[in-house]
Length: 297
Ligand code: ATP
Image 1 (cartoon, rainbow, N blue to C red):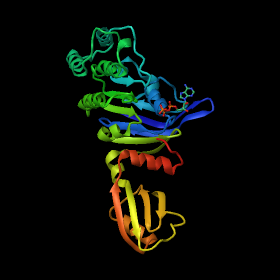
Image 2: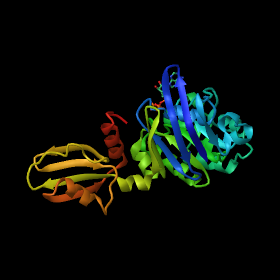
Image 3: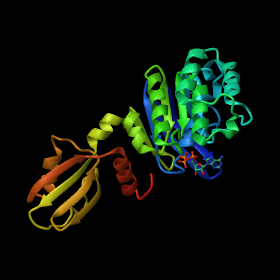
Image 4: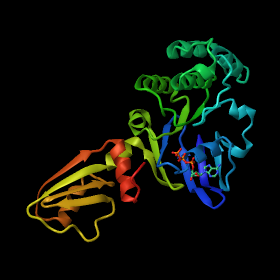
């Protein structure tokens, strides 16, 4: 659905994206995560031609993003982080206004979303709370049944109930629709993303299916027979190694149930016990950020 090829975007001397290659498969819920300033918003804007690439290119629904026209844009929903809406419009008027732009607009879907989100149609958008404005924007976007949804920080500042309503409404659209979202909200992402890419300083550190990511990360605790020195150069994939007395802890980024125990025993022949525990996404991302010298993600 989206292919980014050697995508680079500079702002003066600042390299916001540095040679990004990324493929977003049709039908996926693809989460783009990473620390502040990693380049997530820039990547989304390049997909919808709100920014031009310095070098490289993005293909969206088979079309170079620089050539997207009304025909393609009628099938793409983009919700920016800033979410600028025409403040003076009453919510109902806003929805009818949007309706005119999209041949695929469904009145039934709009009515259902208005009901589900409990949108006050007669109140101007400027008088709505942040969560209600978000719901109004999402109702306007989902009602034209886009094949591709690009959402920048869709959960920021929303309460738990509103988040759940949003996720429910988004999931109802998949797999017919593809969703690419930039978010810091790892707990929400974990509950519904099928794919994840981690962007740091404009470079993709990893991009994969959530299930393979969950399979390859484990928190490892090793109980040794007696205190011993950590290996001078730990194997690749052993992140944030800590040793205290007879206890050794690290995050394994390439865990394999068939070979990891043997690998640990090669370094620590005298050990009593190995425990490998699955990690929540938040802990995986934190371990990666910490191992690369970053402390926030
Ligand atoms: P956040 O999580 O904080 O929203 P992000 O991952 O979305 O960050 P971007 O907004 O894409 O990051 O910004 C990437 C880098 O590019 C940052 O260093 C930012 O300051 C810079 N940048 C973005 N837009 C511009 C601009 N219009 N002019 C100059 N620099 C910019």
